[in-house]
Image 1 (cartoon, one colour):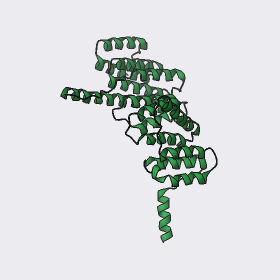
Image 2: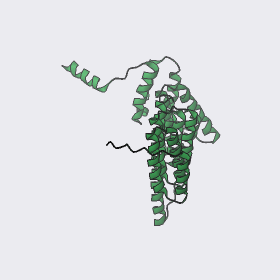
Image 3: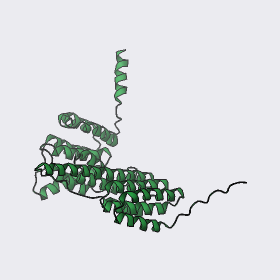
Image 4: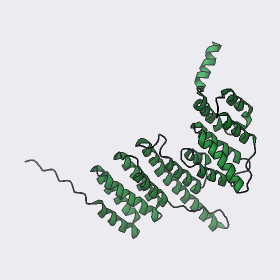
Length: 321
């Protein structure tokens, strides 16, 4: 006698689970609710009811973050994006709005800067640890969202608005600020004016003599992507904002190089491009990454093929032989 296969339990409407788990969170049962969000959403995904799984995970991520549970909220936020991928959900404005809503729920808390007695040191240590957790959680979520957007309908580098969100959060929340990382996402974004404001703000905080490097890096990153328009806009906007705030725009050989470079790239002038690299070599060498960026620029604007270091080495060996 054959046994009948047990019938699969019918999943209830998702709103029932959303309401039940919201009550659990509101009474402080964050961990228990987290496990339920993960297990119940997995059942909806298994049944290919992706829309309901997304509703549940979106609600859970926002609620956990609203209650300051950054680790739990970030985990559910990443699961939300993973479900977009599993369901092959195309990129559109509605989904982008849902991603933005989760992003806005991540806490933004200024890190204390004044040190006093031992209690203050302990407080600062805890605040720095919490800031690091926030940045890691939000970064994991937005990087996943950028990757999903690139695969399912946004531009090749991912949706520009997502890049701006990530750049802003890293800049505002990172206890150890990495402006190269901030710039990486801004140049893939769509808001050079906001990028300029961020750079002007940073110029007021950085060590003396570093402001020109920050400006040069930003411009070269735009140019390495072939984006001469935004590179020019950024320089003009930086000068405008610095003037309006009655600040000094950095004057150095490196800034002079960037100014001449922008003018050179407006026309077919490969010899002048190469001459600039030679004449301003000492300024360019202040930041090792500039050499690679300039190689990218030469390839983008003048079709200069980048030389493979190994090919050069083997070529020299063959000549010797």
